[in-house]
Length: 579
Image 1: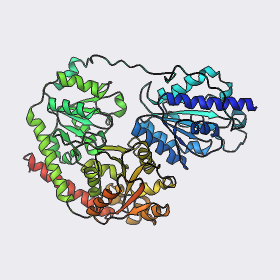
Image 2: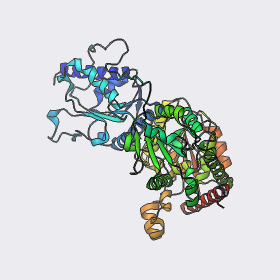
Image 3: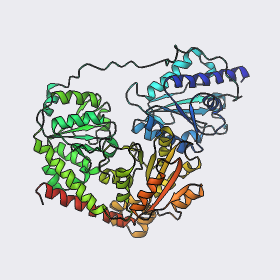
Image 4: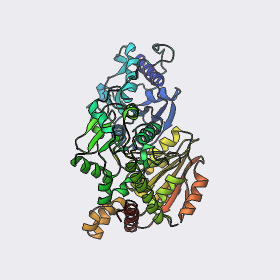
């Protein structure tokens, strides 16, 4: 190809990036590679904040953390071949948890496809239905220049959910050689700093929920079950107070404030069948992402089978209804629907809310009775992080046992904590990278809670660390293997050797020693008080720090959980007169 065509390519890339900036994109995550050079150079010479990551899988989760924290699409640029394939796990997580990403994979031009050219694979529709929008535009020097800005702007709209839900989009861009050429004059913008395409949303002045739906909020005994994206704390709180309904607040909901209507221990409360029967509502309203708790999900299913009305509010519709039970779907924003409900609905009997408040207080007593001990434990560490981190901090929690311990035992805070977790695909992939992305996107301190296997699984993230002004403390719970499997039937049915080989999977390397090998400061507390002291000195400090918590064995952890749940059950049953 001629240098003239290469100049057109460079100009396209500069235009592409310029239009993304106008659309609100502020960050790009780049991975080293040759074929992506034209777009990488355009990014580097723009005002985008550039993050360079060595490993593509880690880069995808780092970008996920940036977008999850900021709410804006992050651009990801990688070269062709297996580099593009490495992004797939992060794309899946972003798709399932509604996180906007713009994935730009470089590719060889058509004349180099299917002839054995190096680093060339079929990248068409590489991510399948995990992306909201995919484009295979072909070599850009063949496009009319007047279409460049429209194309780039559309990627932002599609990632932000113009046709439905936010999520990742994919553009596959074949680039020709020479790859390093200065751009020419860019085609003109729409006007000033306006993006080429934008949305104009006019909120409706009133929302007609219908007589049948509104009747569910007229003196009925109900509960709100709130997850991530379920609406604003103030709207949820005021509506719940007006209706005298409890709010069963998932850890990611940002509703775990000290207001009495907020219930943080529903999982433990509802494990007792007599208690669950006593606290059975007439209406369950689901807001936001499904709960992490299997106990709560099974409770909803059982209630629906008994004729309890299930209402799902949000634009996700059935895709975020955690059971297949009959339900009514209100396809509108939670805040808009709750605003109408709060003005029209009538309260339930006060004793209905009081019973939940008493159960929550009793559950808290049960948790604190057991976790008041000084020794390190997985639930104890989780509770300390939820209760005692600074108000301006963000807690990033790994899937598997950490998110469950936070959900079950984290409790409430004066100001509901900002808590993030990759609960789309629920994997442990890339959790350290995600936390690094979150830390790089904001000025406040970030703390991550991960297990030893999750930490080692994402060890490539340690190569790049965090940005100059970022603060990240990674708290590693080390029980020498996969702790969650000890709670599953496999533990009691398999021989010890078989279980350890397939599920326990103990590692011969220490997370602390691995971190030190990367030059990272490591603190090893031996008690909860020492953990508090370490957090007091490390949280908010610039850079990456690791706190290595060696906790009791996986079997001892199962026994501790059983003890806590028994204490909760005893306290709650007594508070409801069932003891």
